[in-house]
Image (cartoon, rainbow, N blue to C red; front, side, top):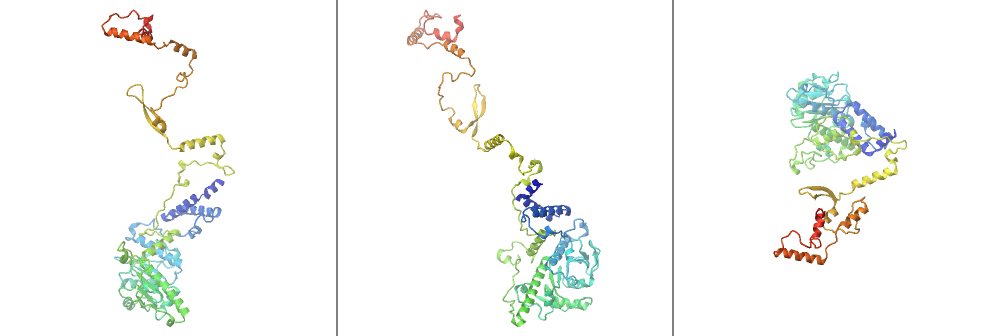
Length: 499
């Protein structure tokens, strides 16, 4: 148990475990594996350092994943429907987190196919916190169910009738968000409607108003709605029934509805504190030109058309990253990945088990290698020092006695530079005598060597050579062969002649 706690105490182990949990959340690993990793992280947070892992809702509770379409047949879905389901389900989760989920009034829909006029809606009776990609129901323009999804719940056709009328009047719209929070309902009940009191109110653009009675059954109501909405307006205020945001994408619709909610809250607070509309300062749209904050659509005029982007796409991707970090597994396809892969150093927890020697720790928590004999420790230290010393040896080829043969040996750098240039000093007459040699044999061998010839003998030898050159006697030996100088080298080189 102590060895396990010591492993948990390693900062590198905690960091790797945190990275592993985040990767499993993004890849959509099995719930059992993810649950086991979270239990391990909770144990470390309670028994180790409290700040070892980030404390977030993903560590405290299990959330229902949004992207649960792994078992679905791709042939039963339209082009891009998988991503659309994940986007719309993620938006329902965002409404729930922001507190905008009004069970009886709020409605979010998405057009899946313009050719077949199919739409994704939330089944009646399902909470916003329970919405997944597979639980959404696919209906046609009349509200008839085409694909039930993973639940057995139906669709409220009366609630969908308003969206059906808007989709029929505006073919360019692909997403509708009907918000019915207290702030939006209060603004929709005011005669002046949405006032230009803040920058958020200017960002939403033109606003259309329609006297909505709760149903859209008559054709006259649809015609009146089409006249009120116009061809380009993206915000529709339903009198006493909240506000509807229209968008060409989920990102744009959420961007619009977010600023509508902020503008309504500002307006309600300002009217309550100012005591009336006459005490408020209105912004002129001609003077205070709104700039979509955080979008790339306006960046083209300053930085050039670097990348085409829809309104609100960057903000929506940031929210999707937040949900993914919380463990919702949105399944969103990021177009602008801003999170770079961090470079990680090789740590001990990354070494595979086949290359790591795991040892048991003693009861005192000390490794057995630290309890070895002092001599063995010194020997290991000396070996380590020798291995870590710089290489001062050089590979040298030395000539041998036999021609054409060389011997390779290792010499120190200073020995290589001094080779062949330093004379050898003889300090002992027996310096080159082989080891374990009998001294008596050395003396006898030394006595056999004749003394060097004297000057007179050398003179006689020169005269003899001179006579031979002048044409003297032709005999093989001279009368003085036993006494003169030439006899000595013959006696030394050929001792067999004297026998």
